[in-house]
Picture 1: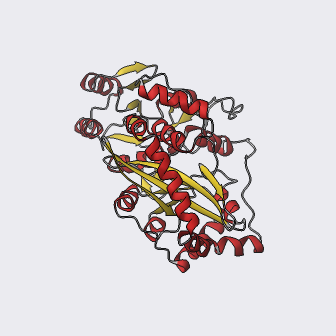
Picture 2: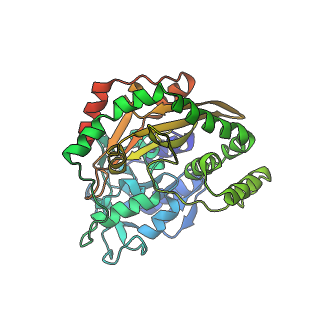
Picture 3: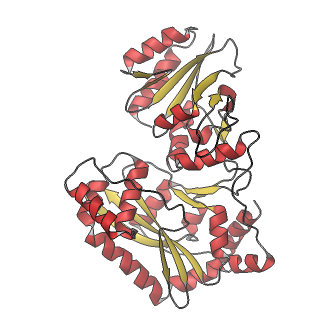
Length: 385
């Protein structure tokens, strides 16, 4: 947790019993040098909205969804002032269950509606939405794109027809899916694994300096997308524009669109059909990177010859520590895979994330050990969601 956010939590707690929303707002605004945007106050480190209630009940309108979008890349905190205590909740879009007020026309191409206090989840995947868990929760949120949350909110809002389809696993599909750990072991032992790893490593070497420059970008999503595009992007003209912007150290970086596919890099061999997801890890920062959409994973692994890999790039200031090609079934990585099934929309099995410290360890000490039975049990768990 940043020191600024820790200071905010303590400052608000020290003023328990103030029983006056406006008085607390003024104190916090001055103490943390906040700028106002309608009902939201913010600085570089966080954004905050103050509400008041005579009781612990919290049905007040907090913020419009369109306004929340502007602050979704930093901790967005709601402070509920009650007579005895000032309560803090993390209210980024990942922790919103639905959109309530004036949301009848909400669509992915029509962002409207407001969020009430009752729409903020008080527990997320077993984690209480309380200040001591804010760092852990925000790390989860940081890996989820606003548009993914928007799709989920459209699905979960009343009178909206769910979008997307849950992948139906047939008996034949299930057998192919459960054979995936064995395919992964065979692939890792093959020459094709060496070819894939060397090709990705060569691209790291080719754009080494620009990757290091990009690693200083503070926006987590932009940083990751930029580095990933340098390595596996398909449009050479766009890559050249990115390289020019980075070399000149300008803020005029061409806009990138997420591919929204399972892997960033697909390579087909005679015996294997590989999809590889490129993940950048800044080793001095805490983060929980997004892993994969479960339905997309199962649909891919239901194909014959399918092998799904991760290419992790570990970066420290001014240095690429290592780059490693790791199976999704690697034992430690599998044990550190967090399934966010409750977060998903009604027509989805959800998504997964990795515990960041496990990726750090794999980057520094890579191995591709796979336990077949453990991996099959994990896949069965995903199928049965």
